[in-house]
Length: 325
Image 1 (cartoon, rainbow, N blue to C red):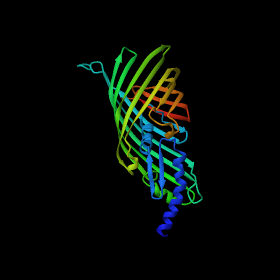
Image 2: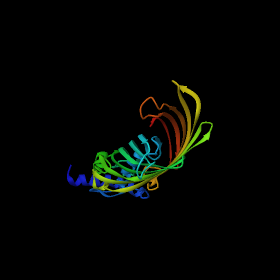
Image 3: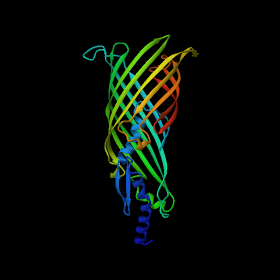
Image 4: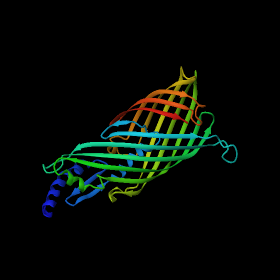
C-alpha cells in the first residue's frame, strides 16, 4: 500500500476514534488522536495508578465490583501488633507491622463513533500487582482506645491493553501502542496512615470494635511504556468500620466459634468517579470466627465472612477466609 493511501486510511480511522475524546470530555482522562497517532493525553498515568491504589491499600474490600468497569480485587493483608516496649522513652508503646499484597483486574467495553471505515467499539483491560508494607506504633489511651501512626512504602505494576472491534482495528491499535495497548506503568508508593481503634465489651461476651483510618500515598513513576503515562500523583483513601462479635455456643474440636457482623465505609476523596465508575461505597456483612490461639504460633484463629457492597455507581459482593494474627 502506498504511504499516501496508508496515511489517508489512518486519518479516516482516527477521525472516528477521536470522537471518543470529545464525547468523554467530562472524564478524568482523555486521549486525542490525529493522523500521526496520539496528539494529546490527559490523566492517563493517574488513571493507571488508581488501580494499584484501589487494590493494594489496606481496608478496601477485596471483592467483585460491578460499575462502569468490571473489577475483581484480590488482597492478602497481614498485620501484627507486638508486645509493648518495657523500658525507655517509648515505654508502653507497642510496635506494629503490616503488609498488603494486592491484585486487581478490570475491563470495560464501550462504543466508538465510526465513519464506516473505523472501529465501532473498544475494550479496555487493566491488571495491577502491588505490595505495600507499613510500620508504626500502637499508642494506647486507657484500655479501650489506641492511636496507630504508620509509615507506608511499596511498589506497584499496572498493565493495560486495548482491543478494537470493527474495520481497521489493527491500525487503530497500533496508534495507541504503549499508551492503551501493551501499556505498562511501574511506581514506587510512599506515604503514611493514621488509624484510630476503639474496642470495648458490651456484656454477655459481646464485643464491639470501631476503626477509622486515613491513608495518603504518593505514587512515583519509575518506568512507563510511554511518556504519556509518566504522571506522578498523590492519593487519599479513607475508611471506617464497626464490628460486633459474640458467642455462637458452637465448637469445632473444642475451639469456640463466634459470630460477627460489620459495616464499613470507604471513600477515595482524590479519585474522580469516572476512573473506576465510583469513588465511595458501603459494605455490610457478617461471618464466623474460630478462636484457636495455640494451634499455630502467632495465629490467633480464622475468619470466614460474606458481604454486599453498594454505593453511587457501584454494587459488589465478597466471600473470604482469613487468618487472624
